[in-house]
Image 1: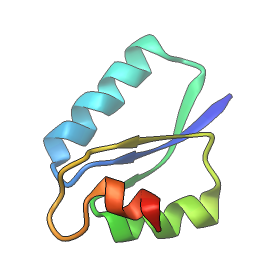
Image 2 (image 1 turned 30 degrees about the vertical axis):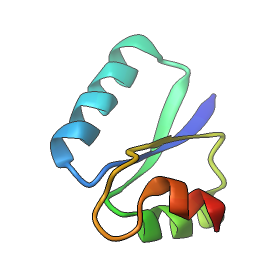
Image 3 (image 1 turned 180 degrees about the vertical axis):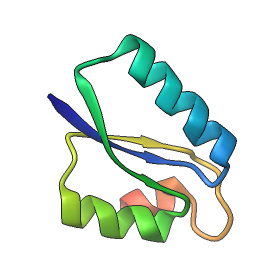
Image 4 (image 1 turned 90 degrees about the vertical axis):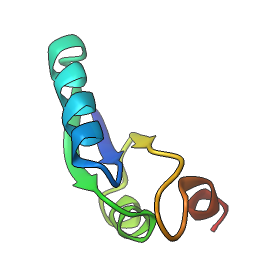
Length: 69
């Protein structure tokens, strides 16, 4: 099982990605969903997923800035 976190500030983006993963990737288990880079950073450190899907452009800090931290 591959654990993953979905990160997107738009609920529609998370819903679409969740649906695509559920339909096409049964080996991927979504363990959390985040709507900001700061929330994602905290959850990644806590949950240690194997994979993270990141929306690049988000209000405040973007995903690339988060990754640099």
